[in-house]
Image (cartoon, rainbow, N blue to C red; front, side, top):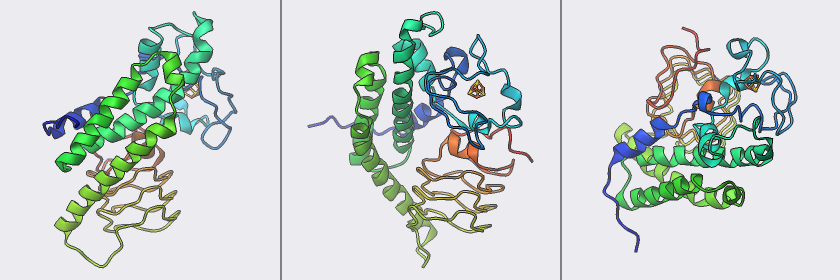
Length: 287
Ligand code: SF4
């Protein structure tokens, strides 16, 4: 029988808040390892394993302060949550791929795997910050430990990980968390006739200005360029939702669930937008 954990909802919050990229400790892995197709988000095509031409010898970006103006909006959106420094400093013990080219090919293949492990850790840590029941808390805790152990593996063991096999139980637990927490929001709001399950809905460009969408399931929804200005989005599950260019000005996302920095970075907002404590207001959001 698995050990029952003492419930402490601050642990998940602390872990979630600690997941921040430290580009100074990374060997420019997001600018090198990933395959990026030319689009409105990235001005050039770049193959996986090829350094971006803007990457400097010290792994900083030579157009860092003008990325959006020069057609590299996608670079201001990406967030590895700390996977880059983990691969650089732990998996490869600080061996820089420029000085040790023999490790480069393996390092670039490990990075996307670590990135996905970190993404799952962020979601599970967030789930652990909610007041779920003890059975779910225990399962989330065990899942978090398994994911954290995986990030400590050697490069070859990381490359052998089957990510879909990891994702399956994580998705199940996140779904269970979402159901429990949104239900508690619905009870507080008081049931009304509106629909709370809008999973995968296509609301691209839809005008939802000022709407009360509290506790709605918007998993995997298409909200590209939707107008959510001043909308009440507390308790909304946003996992996998596409928020590119969605208007979040003045919206209340303070207790939105499973919202990521990348989703926020890709949307439009302002100083009045309320965000969960683990997310930062993007510098491109204007007053
Ligand atoms: S433009 Fe800058 S931030 Fe974007 S991939 Fe190239 S070096 Fe990295």
